[in-house]
Length: 241
Length: 241
Image (cartoon, rainbow over all chains, first blue to last red; front, side):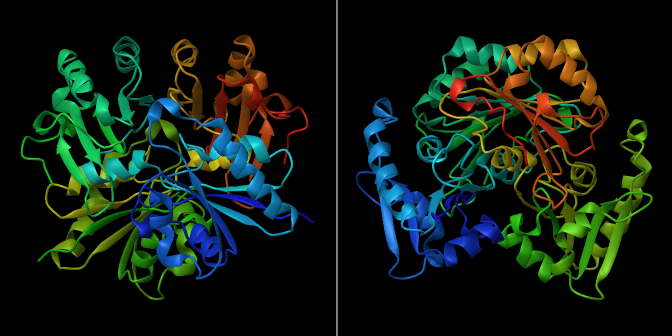
């Protein structure tokens, strides 16, 4: 009997936004794996750190932060091979995933390599989408709204079309694209309807109207939410935190 | 000092998919409120029921299931007034919400009435979107995919355009629109790429390739997920559970 591969969503960052199931599986884990940068701590591991039993086997998956080299196939080949050895021995492996494993997550690189050979269970997590809406204190989407989720690195032309076709829009992974996206939304006369959240639910979180943002740089984990459908949800000028 | 209005996401149905924070707030609640049908039990309350302290004040918000009468403004006026009285007395009110409060949730009807007068905190929850992807064992969206979320009651023409413009599509609240949507996706030659999930994460959950579904009726909480971007994620013919 082989072990089970668990892909565990940890939520947006606040450890309390982890599910009870994630908490149980992590608290009882004997082997965990998680993405980690080449320098500094793993964000995923830091979310779960209070619940990781002492002395268990840990498999960090070191992924260089240079976005243009991502995904690094060989890194996931090596990690899959290491995880595979553990699963074959009958032990479960709990993979810690920021947000949700299947929502723009790197877990899919392990999943596509291992799911054909081993039983897998995915534990969904709170995504940054709804965590950001919660912090902006504004509904993300309702009734018969169409919601479109757009990765920030896409070119302006593509983003513009999708915004035209949706009532609610989330632009993820804003990062170094902030200045370009802000100019685009200004062009589209949507600045007043755009909220900005970085590092949602973490102590260093920043929440602002996009129009009031006084910087042109943003971390990778930053999101713009736009709601076009209802004037009542326009963010007030006084909004900030 | 008035009390705080909490909008608490409970996740898709499995009580273990509630966050630690939702669990803490519910376990310590003295007043809760929740949507309920005019006959039968409240789904939201049933998710949380193991954690609700005995003997606390409960405010059921009875909403008729007839979709064409929804939203029923007077029902939310009355509930808001009742909740408002509690908040003014200094007591917090914990509103139980299926999924996430700000993701197609009825909580917004209370929020728009009360958030100007009382402090509010939203606790995001796991949405059915990622819960369904977890059950289908297929990534919802990745890399630079655009994800579009479409309410099933929208007309075919509108749905068709949005599907054309996205790599990943979720059609929510399929319910009585199942046969029409299945025919539409067959027209678009996307049946093989469409997965179907109803009552995700509950014991009575149903997971299937849409093509294999042997019924034309679905409950309100049913979702179709389509992934167009990658052949490797086509659901295998053998898939079912």
